[in-house]
Image (cartoon, rainbow, N blue to C red; front, side, top):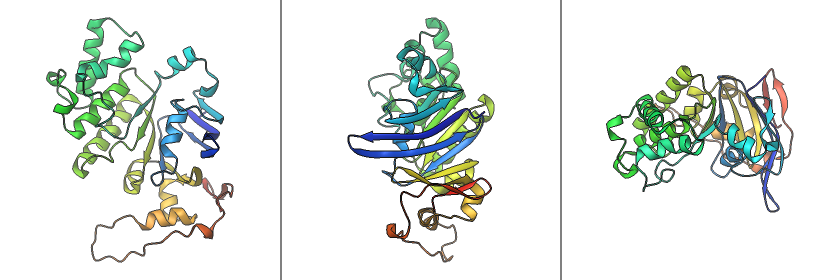
Length: 282
């Protein structure tokens, strides 16, 4: 049984459907990628899964229970297991709080341990994400962007979750720092047996770390499958356009950039299996 199973998730703001009929499953220990351009609905899906935004319909099955049917108290307990790392390390941390208080906050909210136990856990988390515990009394503004993202990651790991949503976790960072944070995520997954939903618009990252990937266009999944197979033989015009935009290391290499023609496909077409485990809305 998968750890996470989305079934026909739909989220609307007023009369506008931002996410429509989205379904995918994530196996335990897997890194599942969700890719698409800005405004495609990726973050809305993530927030809907955690009920930070209330979905309009569908199911979010986590470890056998539908998150959308949980009471407020049950949801509070479930969120210990389901955490999110936000995109922007500059705005996701309260600049008035010291790093120690930021990382400790989930432990306080969920009434975990004594003050001394929480302090030890915070120091452990700081070390776990590659930060110096001597800097716990600093404010977010005293850290670099990469360090701030590590603080956000430490906060997300405080309650020992099994599932982590990484929502564009490195898009605001320099390329050299991106590699360090990605390496940390991979190492933490191995050591802590984490399951990831990795949201990105950078297809190179997705190709590197995700076993499977879903491509989302205007709130609907248009292609899904094993990452290597999908990248090797994209079926949907939108996927082909996205892949054609990936920069190549060789400046002399010729790459044909594909311009998407929205009139070339039916945006409401359902997913169908084109090859084993590879689905496309064509």
